[in-house]
Length: 158
Image (cartoon, helix red, strand yellow):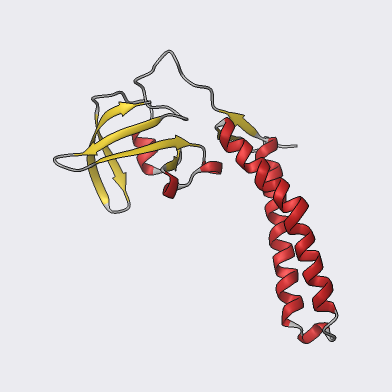
């Protein structure tokens, strides 16, 4: 097999993916099969929108199961970098302030598999994370964003 993509993630992120996989296999898969069974009872499958919707959902669930299995199989757990506590790296939370007078923002930099901006977790592939990785507390960094450049100062790394 060719080199498969590796998915950097925290231990907690991997556990969350494993829980979702378990739910899809044990609960959601059975629900969808039952919906298909019920929809078949409605008669002619060629004009049965319930059947078509259930089959589409089944395809989505099976695709998600395959994706999660691949991500879990190729997960690389992010180890804490204790030697460089003030350097921004994968798995750490970074707090920065937009200059000249912006508010503080804090994000945890994680692999793309567990990124969730609504929970303050951004992908290491995002423009902000790419600009901050390897930088230290006190550094001023120009971040390229879709809205243009912004200058930020790193105030904390945990």
